[in-house]
Image 1 (cartoon, rainbow over the protein chains, first blue to last red):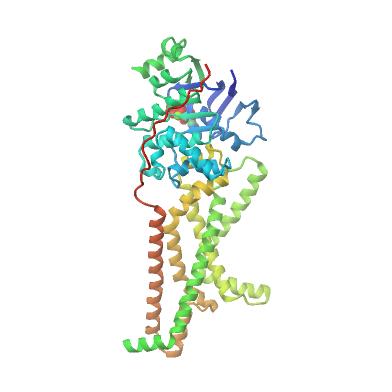
Image 2 (image 1 turned 60 degrees about the vertical axis):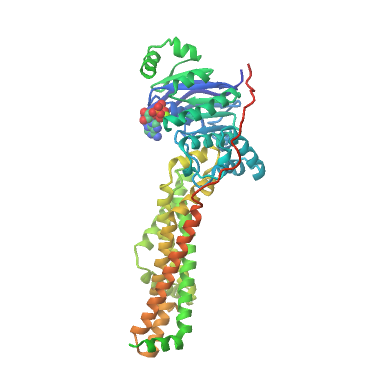
Length: 244
Length: 250
Ligand SMILES: Nc1ncnc2c1ncn2[C@@H]1O[C@H](COP(=O)(O)OP(=O)(O)OP(=O)(O)O)[C@@H](O)[C@H]1O
Ligand SMILES: [Mg+2]
């Protein structure tokens, strides 16, 4: 299996506080990996280290055979290969829906405006937001915003999509529409790394589930193994707490 | 005082009033625009995150200190005193008088720049961190992030403060009469000197100042509404029925 991202001995400290400890972890092409774990266990930090929104304190991140933590490496080019979806959507407030999906393509990937708009429309259709191209972020519901944010990330045609609790800021009635889009993406063969508290969803779509606890990967395996036969006590405890 | 006298005085001296008002507008328009550009640049530099490389870090630190000195100095001294120091100082240093209008525009610009730098800095800081992060996450560098995501929002947010600064400039250019700039206050004084009357010419000046400032207020409100765009959006076409092709390797 071809590894898209391969993380070796990754660590991250905020001041004296070590939030990630010696993480070894990789994502294969076409794989859907869910990261679960209690609040504060370092899930977001891991995701943010992968796209360098946080600078790792140690270790390596190998992408396409190169360590992107080398000084020489172009982190902006690398980031275009990772699509990030945030809990708080973070749509650009000064751009409408279409423009949100176009600006990065034109300014960063140097695509022509026409091409970028065609690609943006394609992905806005995928998330079911193609009718709203003229709307501004503040005119959309949370679920709609998040679907546009997914389209924006997809428009860059990344190798991997990173999702950091994409449904946690949503009203319950809007969670479904976002999960539905993500499920379709997972089934299309997209490589996805998803931090989530939606256990049913993780069970259903993941090829592999990673359980994090206190800055380390405590256990990883198939959804069946993690949810039905966890080997670690802390995994069992976590699942008992969250699944009841 | 009589209404007729005011009317006769305006009829006899309207070119002076008009040229004065024109000069006041010219200085404050250019001063505000140049000042806003200075403020935008200074404000952006002052919000650059600390670089990793030592050399760049030291350089940025030095630039920031210079900017702080500039901002604090011009905010902390009266423009009327700055005008005297700059105009007579440059005359002493170079032996020639600066063009009075140029000196006036220069003084108003750097003053406005000092105030606007703080306004812009506040504007950048008030933009949600998520806007920066999502711009970075799609691969934008600092300049692209600023240009395409952050600054357009900052400019919209600081528009009222900029308008305010413009209005202050229209009024405060009056102090530049001390270096002999022929703006509205200076011209009014001239009219008063010729006619030996004070209330009437200054009453006219008062109205002219108010017409200018109030016009600016109205124009800026119009721009703000325009920038905010329409309240509603229109839907386009029918909802799409899309199925993704399954490309997953088995
Ligand atoms: N910028 C920061 N400065 C200092 N500490 C931080 C920072 N970001 C995160 N932390 C700390 O690192 C730890 C891990 O945080 P992280 O956000 O990765 O957890 P998480 O697993 O995503 O939790 P949640 O489920 O609540 O999102 C937490 O204890 C948090 O307080
Ligand atoms: Mg988190």
